[in-house]
Image (cartoon, rainbow, N blue to C red; front, top):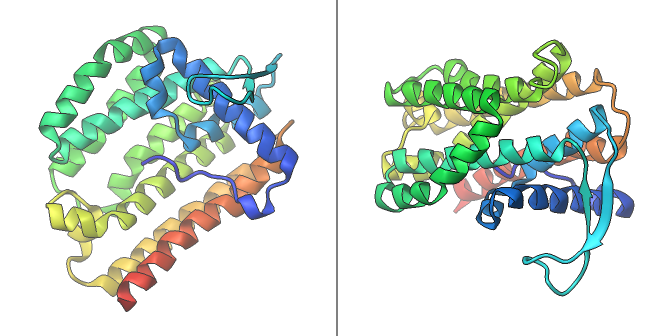
Length: 279
């Protein structure tokens, strides 16, 4: 459930593309404080969170051109501000949560070995951010319980990842910013359902849990229409919540993501559905 919150590059200004890459590399650098191997979890979704927090809670940032082990031959812009460390912790804990999900989906031997490799990192991040770790653990456990029970209720199962992101988005304000919570909630719901729709055929072939497959069986038309309605509803609600926020900096960059990037990711997946049906 990573990598879906992206920029729409055909309409992205060069200055905003440079800043996006700066935040991306800055987040990567912040994650490396937990060990270079943690960088494998770096995601566009958490880069968006970093940019959003930096826009809502601006602080003194450090911008520098530097090389790194991933890009050793050319210096790249790194943007580091007080929000970087928290977003790095979110990224790592969600990345480790994805490993646990793969274990549950059948990759037991490889997944368990991979999880053991990051167990110390998980402890280190959790000790520094106990509230964040508790939120992520509790909601992912709730999601696991629903999936293991074979839940067919789309709203109920999607609510878990939605609540998870809603709580992460408002952890700095203790849940008082309703618009920010709604943005996180609807983005979490959008991510979960878009991922489930995209993976439905693979999940069916492997016997993995997928709420759309359980709810609609072989009725592909009803499945697609339900997925389209739910996914677009959450996307529209996320944009409405975003419009209520007081964005102080990086507004054009965030607008590109919210108004264009999310639509493009949605369109690509539904267009792929049409192509698969025509084969």
